Amino acid sequence: MSTPPVIQISDIANHVGEEVTLRGWVYNRTDKGRLQFIQLRDGTGIVQCVAFKKDMDEAQFQQAAKLTQESSIVVTGTVRQEGRAPGIPGGYEVGLSGLSVLQMAEDYPITPKEHGTEFLMDHRHLWVRSSRQWAILRIRATIVRALREWLDNEGFLLVDTPIITPAAGEETTTLFSIDYFGEPAYLAQTGQLYNEANMAAFGRVYCFGPTFRAEKSKTRRHLMEFWMLEPEAAFYTLEDLMAMEEQLISYTVQQVLDKHRTELAIIERDVSRLENVTAPFARISYDEAVERLQKLAAETEDPQQRELLHIEWGEDFGSPHETALAEMFDKPVFVYHYPTAIKAFYMQPVEGRPEVCRSVDLLAPEGYGEITGGSERIYDPELLEERVSKIGLPREAYAWYLDLRRYGSVPHAGFGLGLERTVAWICGLPHVRETIPYARMLNRKYP
RNA sequence: UCCACAGUAGCUCAACGGCAGAGCAAUCGGCUGUUAACCGAUGGGUUCCAGGUUCGAAUCCUGGCUGUGGAGCCA
Image (cartoon, rainbow, N blue to C red; front, side, top):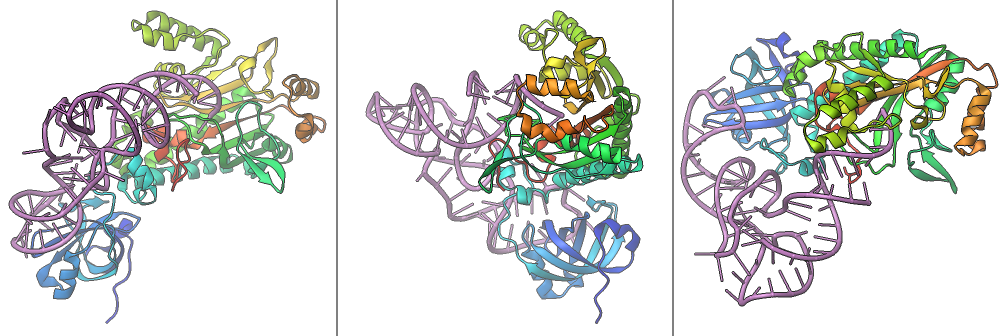
């Protein structure tokens, strides 16, 4: 007797009326005596399998009745359309004729009831099987693919930058240090400086990989290990950068809308907010942003809220400021020309107004905060030298970077995009911890 | 690092100075259309840890640990 062909649940609509084999895990099970319902999960979807006592071998029917949640099984049966059948995609079910058990799962900790965050994060290795997490991580993969696809199509070359580095990428943030054969080394917090070297070799480049920040940040927007996409392009101006970012982001959102209606429905995302994300995005200067915030603070009744929104020109935005600014627009908003003093040393000052620089951050709507940050870079060798010595960076560690300005320096610009914040925004999640398979946070590195 | 809140059964929670409880999960039984099925039964506790107050502490006090939310910093 031959075994029916193995199919994937995502492809089930193409097999109605056929005898098939499915392999996977028991998502849920219930029975009505001589009738059993087994929801089977195979990674591509979930389908309801129906076992009637009269259609099956008695021993197999008895075994099915003992199936525990997440037991691994192989089943055979006939696919039929059935409006009552739940699942992903749903609307189809399999009338079982055979079943074999690969392993009977022990008591599964994650039940179909609600659980707390700590418990779920402790069982992250199992939690990723849940349909909500399944949907989020599939959308994350599409976001990564869309971002890279757009860049590849626009002539940006993927050039990887190192993760183990000899010194800080920028001056401020704390780094994770490692022992490099007796010498200190650090996990990269950005690939940007290397990107600038690669830009001079390939014109338009990007790097995409994990970055590490040893800051003791404890918020819904921070991870110790997160993925950052960093494009860098020769001869790009700040205006070029904004035009590029709005195309890249709107393309990515569109790809998610095209490919993941099912997943967006599972996580109950309000897609109307995403359908709105089309170029051009709003653009306001830092000056205007401060004015808007001061006006808003003045009009705010609640004294506590007014205190949170207080800002003077020259200060960086805190998260209440970013949220308030983003709420003034129904799509992402660029804020450009930040004060030079609060930005990184390599950012190009605005001509005739050196107290501000050619920098731009993109704030996502709905309170998700900064999802990209970028700038034109200083290309004048003397100015860059001056900046490096002024803030007391170790000259020898940056010698190679300063070299770039000595051999054919050109105007150029680039930005970094935080992947997890972008995923959180597009998925409408309250916290970045669910946007990455295994989050590394202040109080968590397990599992 | 700072501020606020929390920790009770495998999970989610109740009990708030006087016998340690419920729902789900587990186990056993029933049911031919379940959608987090339903019905009946059974088992399940170092009330985070250490000290203190009290006739009596899950409950009040002190210290610690762990977590959650927020701030700062940042993407």
